[in-house]
Amino acid sequence: MRRLRSKKLLLGLVVVGAAFIWALFPMEPVGRVFHEFRSPDGRHVITVYRYVMPIALPGGGGSDAPGRIELTTADGHLLHKEPVPMVILAMDEPEWSEREVRLGGLLKTLPLQ
Picture 1 (cartoon, one colour):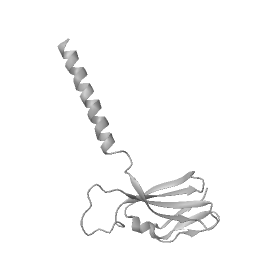
Picture 2 (cartoon, helix red, strand yellow):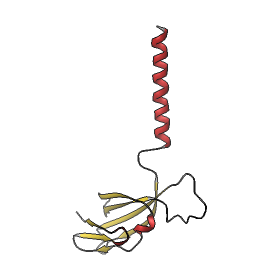
Picture 3 (cartoon, helix red, strand yellow):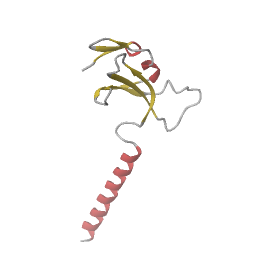
Picture 4 (cartoon, one colour):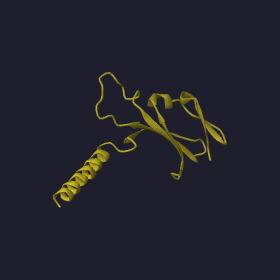
């Protein structure tokens, strides 16, 4: 009986500990909007998110921080999401065409569908 009680207590502590760790370190880091690019026709948006760094090192300007880009339609439908090692790489003006967008700094071309 005592053994069963201690196993339940241990299991409860493990679950609470895992929930606490998950709350501190979610699967995807928290990002803040760093910049947005809108397509000339207004149908698509590229949003550059900069990940919030819990500890900032001196000398960094923020643009060397990691982040992600999201390509969405104007109404918010997500078409593409991808991490970037430094948000400065995603800051070149995108080249929009009818079917795709080219991100020069990242050397990527994404379809607009």
